[in-house]
Length: 130
Image 1 (cartoon, rainbow, N blue to C red):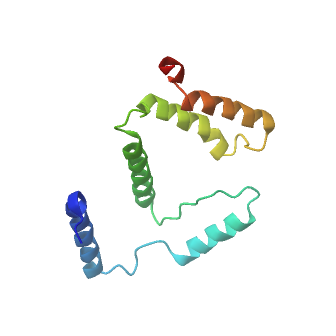
Image 2 (image 1 turned 90 degrees about the vertical axis):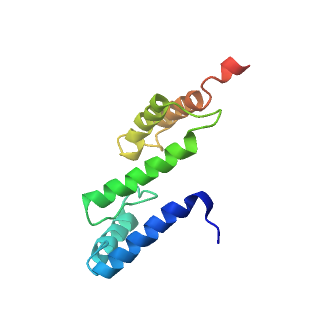
Image 3 (image 1 turned 135 degrees about the horizontal axis):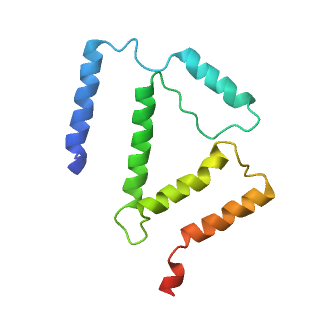
């Protein structure tokens, strides 16, 4: 199969996996007990989240989050509707209290506030185009 421009990255990832296998990876990864605790928490939380990050070390959390941010930025950058860095940070700041539980999507006033923000954020510059 032709992997095109991703071949160099793919080869690097394969080499890294091979090296880890040769070194022995029995003690790597998230312990099953930690996964079970997270599943239990998700099942019984009053407001469970859509996703949970279960990693054995801080560095794994950092790597995972950095990869997600990289994917977000790659998705955003380079088209006529791209958002600036400041606009992305503005969105993160607006969403943070809802995802952190400080505000609720269920509260009508807070939901209306967020919907107003989202409408303005998503349609920024639209009036300039008309």
